[in-house]
Image 1 (tube, one colour):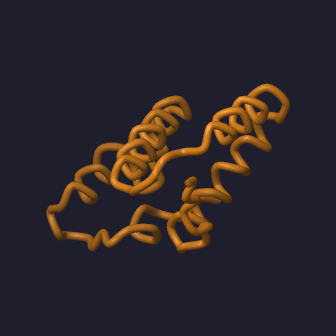
Image 2 (tube, rainbow, N blue to C red):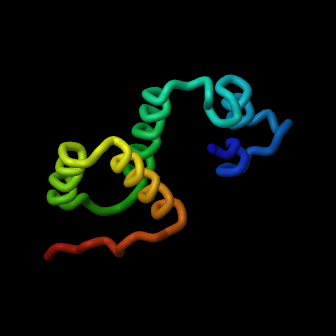
Length: 100
């Protein structure tokens, strides 16, 4: 079961923030959004966060991602997304690779 928005964010009831407006419009667990809409938001936010970071993405990572989409079940793809989100949020990532 999904936890409410305030569990994951700095939302405080009554703060008149965007987070409050989102919760009022789409529900505390975004239950008024379709899965496709949620994934679109995830894609846009991930792209924005990635653009804020230094460094390049190794070419092999695109190949690995293509293999994942071709060979893994939708459930396993969602599981990988969940794992990566947790790792990005809580700092479990490798040091940047520097090619000389």
